[in-house]
Every structure is written in C-alpha cells, then in structure tokens.
Length: 425
Ligand code: EPZ
Picture 1: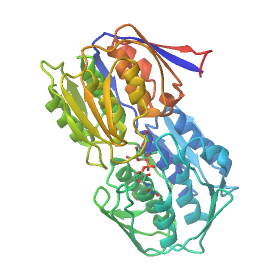
Picture 2: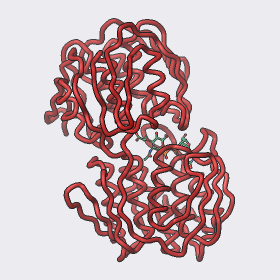
Picture 3: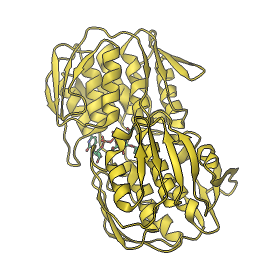
Picture 4: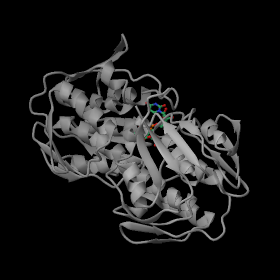
C-alpha cells in the first residue's frame, strides 16, 4: 500500500487542468453495452474506478483498448450477462451494467452491492424503475436477477427518502433507451452527469429530452449505434481544487472546467471571502483578504454537492467563527471528522447529519487514515495547511476518483509525496 506525506504551509499557485468526470465516465462506459457497434470515449479519467468498470465489462465479454487518450469499447460479442460479487463489491457503480444488460439481452444477473462506508445505500429505486418497465426482478443469494421479454416505456417516479437518485435515474434512462414506447421519469436527478449520459445516448441514436430538469422523457429505440463522445469535466475535482486554493490562500487558475456546474460552490466561496474570475472554461481564484464562516446545507444538484462536503469542512476548520454543515444525502458521511480532529480541528457533531465547525488558528500535522474518496480529499486539503507533516494512509481511496492528484498539487507548489506504506493498517 501507499501513503501521502504532506508538508503544509505553501499557498498553491499556478494553473491546473481538470480531468474528465469519473461519475459521468462510469455510467457512459456501462452504456456502451447498449450497442453492438464500437464506441470511442475521450477524456475518460484514468482512475481506479474506471479500471474496475472496465474489468466488469471484460467479464461480460466487452473488449476495450486505449489509443492515446481515447478509449474504445466493443460490446459486439457479449458472452455473459452476469456481474459477480467479487467485482461489484469493489465499486457500487458496477451496478450500472444492470439496465443496459436487461435492455439489450433480456436478462441480467448482478450482485447486490450491499452497504459501503457512506451508509446503507439501497438500490430499491433502480429495481422499482426496471420493474415498472416490465422486468421480472428476483433477489436471491445476494444477486438481483432481471428478466424481460421486451421492456416497455412507462411513467416512473424515482424519488426516495433522501431525494432524487443519480444512479437510479441513469440506470432507468439507459434501459428505457432500448425499449418499446415512451418512458417518463418524474423526480429525475438533475446532476450534470445525468445530462452527460443522456447526451451520449442521444449521440448513439437515442431520443431523450428534459435531461437536467425533474422530468426526463425517453423515446425507446430498437437499436442504438456506436459513436465518439467526450466526457464533461469533473465538477468535484474542480471544486476540490478551488477549495484547495482557498484553504492555502493561494492563487490558482482551474482550467478546462465548466463553471456552470459549480455555481453554488462559486457563490459560497465568494461569500467566504475569495475573489473569483471566470471564463467559459476556467476559474481564477485569488487569495482571500478576510474570510467569513459559512452555513451550508448539502442537497441534490443544483444544491451544494455531498461530494464537496468533506473538503469544505477542512476549509471551515481553519476559518474563524462558527460554521455549520448539514448533510442530507448519506447517513455516514462524516468519517473525515474524527481524522480532522486529530489535526486539531474543533468540530462538534450535533447529530448524525449536522456538523458545527469552530474555526481554529492552525492545524498541526499527524498520521491520518482515509475512509472514502472524498474524505481522502478533505484530509489532503487539511494537510496542505497543517503545520509540519501529515501522513495519509489508505490512499487507494484517493486513486479511485482523482487522476494524478499529487502531480497536479505538486505543480501548484504543494509539498506532497507518494511513498510506500509498509505499516498500512
Ligand atoms: C452518485 O451516487 C455518485 N456516485 C456519488 O459520488 C454521489 O455522492 C451521489 O451520486 C450523490 O450525488 C457515482 O456517480 C458513481 P444516489 P449514487 O442514487 O448514484 C438513496 C463519489 O465519491 N437511494 O443519487 O449511488 C441513497 O442511499 C460518490 O464520487 C435510495 O434510497 O447516489 C442516497 O441517500 C460517492 N435508493 C440518495 O438516494 C436507491 O435505489 C442519493 O443516492 C438509490 C439511492
């Protein structure tokens, strides 16, 4: 295993380019199963979750190869419709193969992902959606088996107790694209990643309208065709680097991003005290003169993203005054808090969903453990301003979702090193 060693105290300066969005790349790779023609994807981030998804597709018989930065997928010769637990347990998003497999091959057997570090994370809405389209669904021995002669378009409401679902909206949208008739998803997730998958499916010959709004209409097709497609920039990486600049009082130009996808964060960072200039595909964040605490409630897009809550807590940990963050999406998304407290942060959990953060003058470096992708980003950001050395172990979590993060930060002047971690817990 490996760990990061960070020596804090350097303001980040310079330019950084944003990679393609992991959370758009994963479903779009799965969606390539919907066509027998080759699909070529650009701007796929080379992160370990992408390689896990490619392994799932390989088990099914889908071929893939890279040429420079273009990934081509060929699902013309699928030999299996079963995604085994060994792969699904590594990454919940492997579940995205369910919709495409049942739509194209009339059957799919996919292991139930179970819970994860963020909480129970059920898949009932995915199943509800596919059942409404006409699939017969059975859960046995830890697997979901889906069978359908022909999926047929219907009206589906996809809201759960925690609000809309990105995954269920995408899974149902993929399946509905290769079905008979028209599907109307109500209470659909509006995340930019949902829109990107819809745009990809339309490029394959699909007919989807309303993506980015709560009602998505999908006119099913008998067949979809191959295409070339470029993934949107990663708004969570963008946000993480903007917050990294703010926390180190740096001056960073984040390039090749889409500022429209980070509207709420930009607004909050301005309220916090930084000046941000923007162009169509860049954001220039200047050092703050005075800073203010914030009160934030997480929510589905366009609200503040749960994936940026952990890095934001790191920023507020060193911001004078009392800040509050209310998480509403996942019941266990504060695993980074006890680690930040080890650095000297003053954070009080009022209940499972509410953190009150009293800004401290200085964090001090310590050995830490990452628990999930975004928690690891929070720890890195805290390490960038902590006095002395911060060691972060279990950085395989970071590698799941951030492409070359330490290289990007090093180019901005950070002192961050990846070393082997023989004592890894
Ligand atoms: C996606 O997860 C992202 N993952 C997550 O990013 C992100 O945090 C999340 O959306 C919310 O924005 C990918 O895109 C691969 P949901 P997803 O379905 O699709 C509940 C990261 O670090 N729910 O929108 O799984 C669920 O438990 C990851 O990149 C049901 O109740 O999230 C949660 O409370 C972490 N039933 C809420 O809905 C279901 O069938 C939203 O989940 C499905 C979800």
